[in-house]
Length: 273
Image 1 (tube, rainbow, N blue to C red):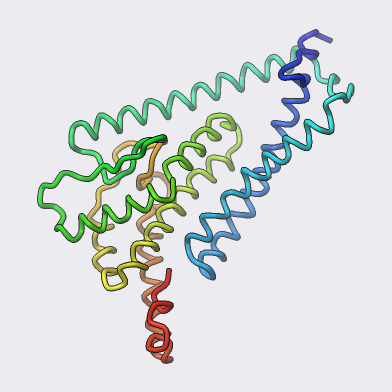
Image 2 (cartoon, one colour; image 1 turned 120 degrees about the horizontal axis):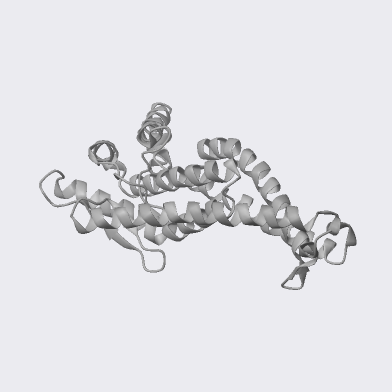
């Protein structure tokens, strides 16, 4: 057996850390699969914000798994059954994969920033530590009222610290690049972020729901991905279909309540997202 199997990092054998990392990925994948389904029920029953909050569960489950694994296997000699050669090969592949995915994110971010400097970016929120709102060029494409709705949506992202959440998701995509459910979770997190912000905007502006939907349709999707910020992803199922559908579903719900007298009795609840 190679001596590489006995390498100690931070007081733990390298094999112990590797096994804890792999097990955390497995647990996180299982929780992601569960949240992917449960979020749909939570969105319908409690609103998009509740569905978005469920995404803290995979991260918590992964961290708890690592803690339990390190506490239980610190001095377990059985972990050295893995050969040092295999461990070294796995570590090399993992590092190369993580660097490759990180490079893709950095390049995409740089391209988006170039679009912003050229006046073609937005709407979006950029910046991990100090987020700032990027608005589309004021070329008459949007009315003043539509631009205010866009600002309200992006301000919700900043208030909810969504750019930091997107940055954390990108970090885990880099570290867990081999786990397809991590990438699925990152995509759904972004969608749920948008739905939660949509709901907050129309909750405060119930009479602007139709205008808001039209503004969504007018807004151009970002030409390139934005890993460290908030934008409308052009990848996968078109997010506007879900977002407009959510607004329409809320309108239908409000009409049903109005027909039964609920709208008169509780006008705010009738349009609560």
